[in-house]
Image 1 (tube, rainbow, N blue to C red):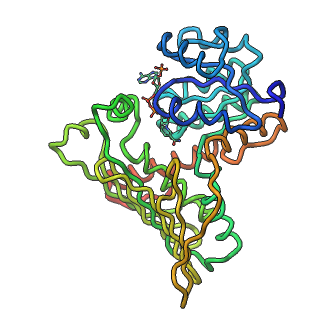
Image 2: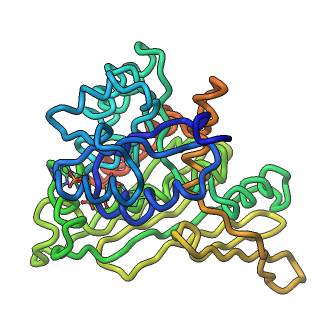
Image 3: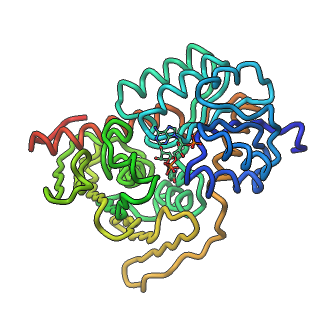
Length: 342
Ligand code: NDP
């Protein structure tokens, strides 16, 4: 599309993820363009605006954020703030008449997620949760192979997603505060495993068991939990086994065991690297080589296309809500020591 035809995005929150992954990815977009920045740091916003060619009039702060309503160049607001602020900034964007792309986790509770979905519906605007893995070629291929029956009947999905939290890094300071993060490693990285179990199987968890563990003398875990392990039973009888952590080394892997074949991805959800192997009975495990795409640009373009063509996004608010419900069930199962029905 020509620059004039592209869908204009405002990025809210110029933190680590926005600056290092999202803003540079607009250069790889065919349908989305960056037209506005919202930040609490005026000097940073001016510098970033200069770098990306955003006009002075496109710069806003949190106090005058609602004025985005007056800027017709902004069609979509991309919320990249700490988790506890997603609901407020999404709802204010809807009130300003904009569509919303929101980072994961969509909110800090299922109640908030439902309010966000209702607000979008009331405003007649679209809500998409930025689940980048669902716009990424290796994960798409895995879904396609499973749907076409190449693995046979699915028996077990295992996924471990974690990374060490570093309190000295600004991006991890709010992550270790319950009021801003809403949860620990489960909300931040475990969500990739929860989401993968759902999109790979195409099923929703029916029963959940879980445990959490934090070292009592580790100051990082005064407010949020460190490790969680969980199990899902899906309606078909498929079992899932997941783990997440803020203290084991960076891990982003998954495996799917079917009656006929197995698939393994490691890393499955990295920014820049993906590797996938398939093994069948009597055959050596073989690596599947696929072209890599820019998953951030693919997500941005998908949202832009949905706005232009008035279609529902692949990962709408309801998709974010289902993860919130699954994660709340995991916390409840861990707290009570009982099996929880979702
Ligand atoms: P950062 O802390 O690096 O950035 C958050 C930004 O939000 C800040 O830089 C700041 O921007 C703004 N902000 C506004 N209010 C506050 C506040 N009270 N405390 C801290 N920051 C505030 O975090 P990330 O960029 O790592 O994460 C932001 C969101 O993106 C989270 O929801 C996270 O889960 C998600 N994320 C998603 C990833 C993915 O792969 N999909 C990867 C990483 C993060 P400013 O200075 O401009 O006001």
